[in-house]
Structure formats: C-alpha cells, structure tokens
Length: 280
Image 1 (cartoon, rainbow, N blue to C red):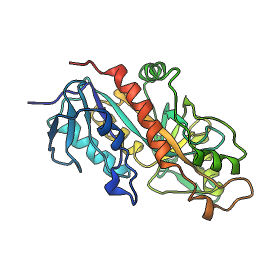
Image 2: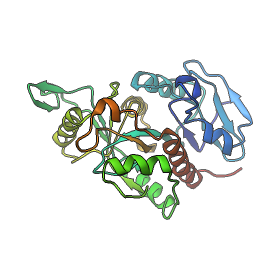
Image 3: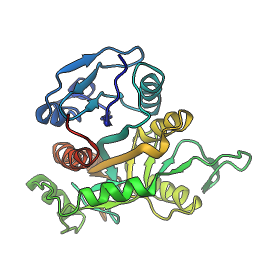
Image 4: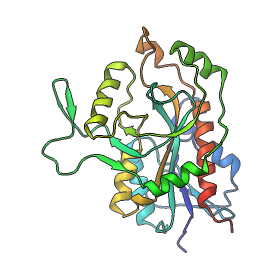
C-alpha cells in the first residue's frame, strides 16, 4: 500500500555521517513514535513512519546529489506525496549580519551557489542559460509556517554566547525568514562570503541568510515532480560563515554550536510539522 504522509521531514545526516555525535535525525526519533519502517529503493536509510501523527522521516545524506537522489526516489516510488508538506530541517552556516548563532531561518528563496559565471572578480548567473538557479518558495506555505512558530522559545548556550563575544554580537536566537544559499563547497571566510553575497544580489534577492549543502538538490527534484509548492526549508545557524572582525578564518572555522543548531532546527521544524499534520 502506498504511504501518504501529511508531512515528510528530510534531515540531512545521522551520527553516522559526522565524527562525534551530531545528528539531525536524533531529535525526531526522540519525540515521535515511528512505528513503521519502509525500505525504498534509492534511499540511504529506510523511511520511518509515525502512524499517529501521519509524519514520515528519512535522512537524505549530505550534499545536493544525495538530496536530489533521495527526493527523486521518494517521489517516484511507493510514496504518495501529492498532499504532503515537505520539510528540510537542519543546520547551516549563517551570515552574521542576518542572524546570530542558534537563530532559525525559514527560507523564502533557495540559491544554487555552484552554477554561476565567474569572470575575474565578477560573479553572476550564466549569461547563456535560460533558467536561473534561484527558486522562490511558496509564499502562502511560508506564511503558515511563520505563524506556527510565533512566540516559539528557542534554546541558547554558553558556547554560543562565548563565540558571539568575538563577533561583538549580543543578540538572542530568533525565528525569521531569509534566503538560503546551497553549495557542495564548505566555505568559511569573508573573501568567499562576499562572493556569495554578490551572487545572491545578482538574482535580485538581496543578502542571503544561511548557507547549506542540500536544498538546491531538493528543490530541483521537487520541481521536476511538480511538488515545489509543497516545500519548506528550515535551517538553524550552527556557525558563522566568516571570521570575526580582525580574526583568522583558519581558526574561527572551528567555532560552531552544532548541538544548539540541531536542537533549535528541530524545535521549529516540529512546530511547523504539527501545524501541517492531522493526527489519526
């Protein structure tokens, strides 16, 4: 029988993909009763299903190719997504001017960082391509998600406050909206960050908020299957994408709060999921 979840959650990684214990899947396993597991061809991990909440979950794997393959396998396989709200929920790098460590962004745009034209110091869309590699996500769906997170309390940590001090940043984590830029390259440093901002501005969307590695692959697959208007990206800032003022990127790249980011991404993701599920 085909599965028809109300919500499909797509974290990128489990503890198996990272050294240490970081896992975007773990908070969902802790808070849901996944009473059914289905093996589907093309998935890295089985699809878990919570019958009571009608919520499904699987890990995509890290990177655009892995995300696109997983989403395509789900959309083309024995899983009816025609009425499903699809959520990417995980951590990201963050532009310091957009938000602080632990903050969560609901994406209004997804930008592919890797497909671009670079001539000297100029960066922009490929001039000879008809399609632009930026996707605007459904505004109505986004507004519903924002409403679901109104007044939601986020966690903070001493580690995050210590890192913020190096950036002269006294802000608390918040939930807000902003563009996410996706690339297979992990970057850290002002020089590259400025280039990422130039690409975002060339698409007319202003400055970006977060950087991650899966969402461009996810939206590409969803668009092919006519499901893009059912998609939301929820990303928590686990590290800044550049060094602090006067700092060195070779040392500041190690300043991250993965645990805080994973916790807050899950808090927001679960609040959004609850708004879109119909308990059985």
